[in-house]
Image (cartoon, rainbow, N blue to C red; front, side):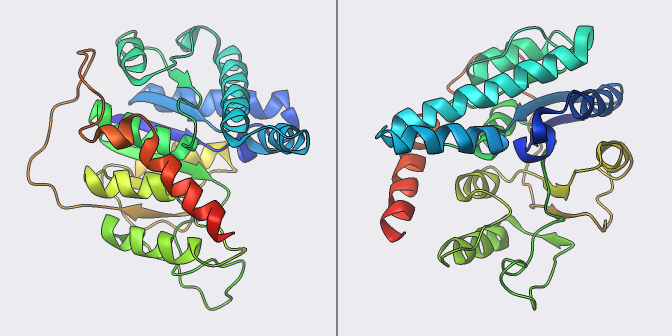
Length: 270
């Protein structure tokens, strides 16, 4: 299988613990023995700290986005160091570069790409571009709930949902002040648009990440630590490989303008 993994910075880079990076590197190494693997790393607490400092000094939001992107790439660089010879040595800065890197047979690791897009959105676009078999969003949340479980004790967890259902849930959660959705709205839209199979899972234990992706990804049986997002497909597309084409059918999503507009609407509501 061709798998794109969005690895949250909050679980990968917590306290910048070298042992944590090495444990995730071992997990990714094991996964790559069975699957073709590309990883997009998040920024985590360090990105939030740097962005907060920039805002306090009057930086505009685009500048803050670029700062966040740089932090995600620093985390990518650390993970590449932990993977050693099993990693592609360079960090792709766009989707065609990631596609070319994939042909090396190594684990490809990258960070953010476009201002206004989270690394979840970057991973979703990458999965669409490569026509991946599975997008995995590895986070500290054990799946998708009917509402934010941190704010609503009656929230119900789903074992499997459709992309359309995911969008409805995400947008409802995002409309509520103080609530946080398990999937970025832009990523959810891309999952729905290209009918991606996806998994949202609690990956704070790297060994569990290996167990689920290597053991359950093909059959998508219910798991306690996550939610499967499955779509009906009319046709199975071949993996893109290294051929270079425009990486999104919709140029507004490709260049980030649509996600920037969505971000601006959310900021206006706040």
